[in-house]
Structures are given as structure tokens and as C-alpha cells.
Image 1 (cartoon, rainbow, N blue to C red):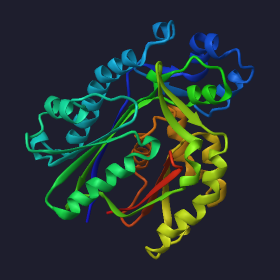
Image 2 (image 1 turned 30 degrees about the vertical axis):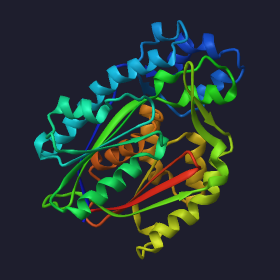
Image 3 (image 1 turned 60 degrees about the horizontal axis):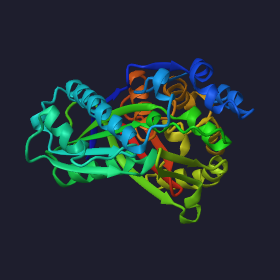
Image 4 (image 1 turned 60 degrees about the vertical axis):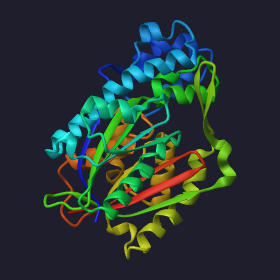
Length: 347
């Protein structure tokens, strides 16, 4: 059975306090919206990390090419840091990795990160590489699924999954409500996990996964390429739409494994935003204790898109609270609208 045997996270060195960043750097561009300061203050985010230097980044509107050049530069550094931490945590040498999956939606380059990182880290020339691009906040789950399939087919294999996003590079000089919300939420980060088909040490076993997409709501969440970076579309209806579907979705995953919500000890829910977490908490009937890891990651890091749910799982793991036999549910959401979930069990 597939086991997560190591998790690591990495963030850029620049850490910004939410309201200080707004008043000192963002207000000149977003302050024309009378709701902007209130949106930032009500985000439930205290800090975010970013590769950009706000003292210079906002002085002019960078082209998409300029932003992408910054992405390539910083993503290689941050991605290597996350991978090496994951390898060190598991005591695994780079040449022992058989599969590499790289997930991102905030930049593109050919040769891609899968190749440049394989060279930087020292992976074998015959490592099997896959890039999962453009899928947004839930993309860690397609990566998990591909890695899971690999180690199910080859139980002696080791698969490493890297999710990395540099959302700050796509700040938009736009004071509409939708853009203010986007500029208040997103941040930069990377996370890596190691999956193995067998594990003799404590691990997190992947029990089951599930996907659900509503093709009638494609317009509610998107990331459009413009001449000045990628422009986020984030409908105000997203929290309600997710809330309407999440109960049946979660219960189907649990029921087919002879479980109920009461059997779940830990919930790792992607903190897409305060309203999303509020709606999902209410619909799933979870108390504040069950949501503390998701809200803690949102408070300390913001929404980093695809790596964020792995930050939540890492926070649960580092808490030392899970015991052998405990079940957990990971969930994330993104364009489609798409819902992804993974049932895990601590071993």
C-alpha cells in the first residue's frame, strides 16, 4: 500500500505582516477601492511569504515575460530546498528516487522544473518525470494520485512529489473587489512528499482518493494569461457552491471505506480563504478544533495554491498528535469547480 514517509515545506525568506504590507506597499494601488483595507483586515491572514521585494516590484507593471523569468529563477531555488529537506527527513539519497512529479501553475519554462531540478538535486538519468501544470489549488491531489499509482504498480519504487507556487509574481494593479481579494489571499511556498510502496517505519498510508468536478461552474474560478502576468478569477459564489456539495462528497469517500465523519481524527482542508473555511466547517459539522490546522496555515502563510494542503498535513504531523490507527481527510478545491479528497491513516 502507498505510504507517505516524509513531508517537507519551504517558503521564501521574505515574510510580510498582512496589514503592514497593505499600508506600506499595496494601498497606493488598491486603496481606490473603499473596501480594500477591510478586505485585507478580514482575511484572517497575519503573514505571507513572497519572493518579490515590494519596495521595487510594484513600481511598474512587469510584463508576463519578466514575471516568468523571476519564476524560473526563484522556483528552482525554492523547489530544490523543499526536495532536499524531504530527502533529508527520510534519509533517502537522490539516486534512490524513481519518480519525480512537479506541480505548478504560476510559471512555465521548457526545459521545465522537472529537468532543471533533477539536475540540481542529482537524480538518476533514468528517473521518470511528470509535470502537472495549470490545475490550481487542488493540484497536489493529481500529483498524489500519479505517485500512488506508481508505487502500487512497483512496490519497491520511491516517488517524490513537489508542489511549488509563486503567486506573488502575479500581483495585479487592479482595485476591483475580485482583484483586491486575490491580492489579499495568495502567497508563495513549496512542499514535497515522498511516497513508498512499503514502509517499516511510522508513516501515513493513503487509503483512498476521490475527485468530483462540476462542469457547469467553469467560470467561477480561473487563472487567465494576460500581458502583465496571470489574472485570477475568483467568484464570490465559490464558498457557497463548495458548501452545497461538500457533505455528499466527503460522505461518499468515507462510506465506501466503512467510515463516517465521526471516525475522522484530523481534517486537512485547503484554506482557500476565510469564507470557504467557514462554509465548509458549517456544512461538515466540524468544531474549531478540527479546523485549527487549516486556519493556522492560513494565518501564518496565506493561500499558496497547490502546496497549501500539504502544509496543513505537515502541521498535523509535526503536532505529534496523530496516533497509529487515526484517520484523516485531506481536501482541496479549484477550477472546475473541482473537489479533491484523500483518506489517510497513520501507521
